[in-house]
Length: 328
Image (cartoon, rainbow, N blue to C red):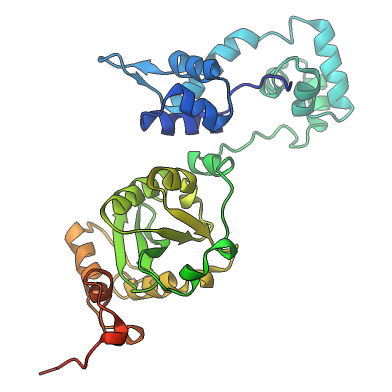
């Protein structure tokens, strides 16, 4: 049996997301392959009860509570054990990293060792130890919640595993998804049907995976979406949760192969006619987005025998049955 490891911040991000969606202790424990009691204790110990008795669990606050407790416990655990202090010093000088020391000997955490080094009074020994650290004492940069989740997200199904009916555009409901950056705090999330070109555009305030998840769930609940093909942007890191909650199939292009979802790329180019790069887009209204969406969905397309995406996707007209359109 492998030794027990403390819950990581990345896992707390997942716990917070699943708990917010009212998933049970049992569900979360299975999802993270942790013991039931581990998840239960984590949520109850590091969460905060609201006035209605409901536990509110947020990853950042939960992790800070854990760190605070840990520091109180082991703030002097090395200093108070001369034998341990000498042994750790010897190992670091022998080019062991704090992580390797912690993992092999299971005494104190690697962060405790780093903290011990940073607060040392013996400057000569401190310089000697820092010299043997790989990062020379430099602190690690914190990883954002979005990137943290990506590191543990479920395996992706690549585009070469996509059914031939999707590749051949044989049915409605197979979409391609992407985001368009308007500014630091504003983006557009677009989904385009491969067969009809019908487009959904949503204005979002950030590129967080949680935001994409919520918008996608809302769109799937209201429309006939069978599959989505994305690129490898971190904003699509919740793809496994989307698939779980909607029962749709999600595929990914190979890295740097954005042309594999060319329908969406071309549509984003059309959208750029209304929102050019390098232009400040402030105070965007929902009506503005709806206007652009309607313009694209009611524009005749040559490949649809000059039917519109709306006529094909919503009215279910078939391009091969299209008659000559009377202009006047």
